[in-house]
Length: 177
Image 1 (tube, helix red, strand yellow):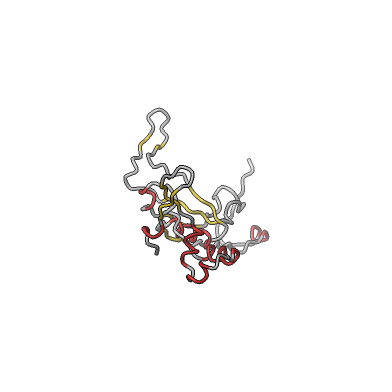
Image 2: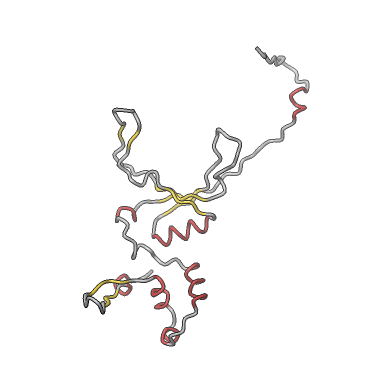
């Protein structure tokens, strides 16, 4: 998408006189515009912000994440409601989870018997309001991802009167004590 060498530039600091690397995502978007627009000196900030929302600028260039994090696949999904409650709290957002590493050095803690792991990203997840926001973030981080589509819960029709309707066969007996 972008050439890394063209994105990074050496800038001489007026205070210290030393060279340091600087990069701004706004500068990347400005450099992609037509040369006539860049030379005028006036910027349309609203238009730049809209383009920044639509176009995913790779953040891996400026972030300081470990290299092994860039190779991990993430899963984008909408969590299901918990089995032990009838409420649907926590199911209205989309989640991004890191997949479990195959050689992540899992072991059982000898003192308490808890499961332990050497994977530092195992319990990390991110929440997003929409699936598109999660996809946009993963593309911006340059993470490989896959999307798990949610299943619709099918709730059959229920009737209180069905508890007392006649059905041939063995009689149901409810013991109270």
